[in-house]
Amino acid sequence: MEVDPDTGAVQLMSYHVVDDVGTVINPLTLKGQIHGGVAQGVGQVLMENVVYDPDSGQLMSASFMDYAMPRADTMCNMEIESNPVPTKRNLLGAKGAGEAGTVGALPVVMIAIMNALAPLGVTELDMPATGENIWRAIRAARSA
Image 1 (spheres, rainbow, N blue to C red):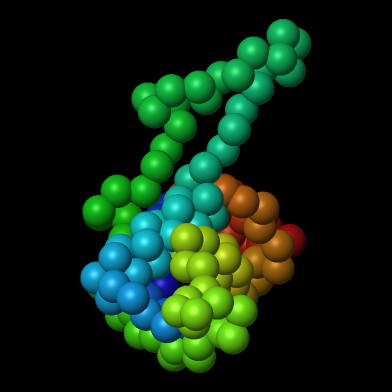
Image 2 (cartoon, rainbow, N blue to C red):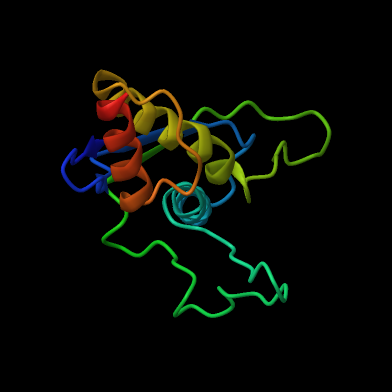
């Protein structure tokens, strides 16, 4: 994780994940599910922001023109490995993998951002960790 202190821009440098999904039936599909889940988690941390008009309650971020999603340039090289421990709950020994990447990505990315910002005096930051929100947090920490 790199954070530009002048702009607040975040760049993921690498991501390594190891999951236990039991018996791996299709390694390629599994990697795709985990990759997509990580992208979803990264998107939630860095850019997802549901905004409502305070007066009318109208959703203001209702289209993809207003609601950011991660793209290929948001992501980094990802190393995905499995540590399969088959379950005894079914004959295949398989476990779910659909949200495996998402669950870990949220705390991992947010903690990495906070670790990068700690030397600058930032002690708290609400999601989404947009460049603007990070920049504001850095400025607030420097003026405190």
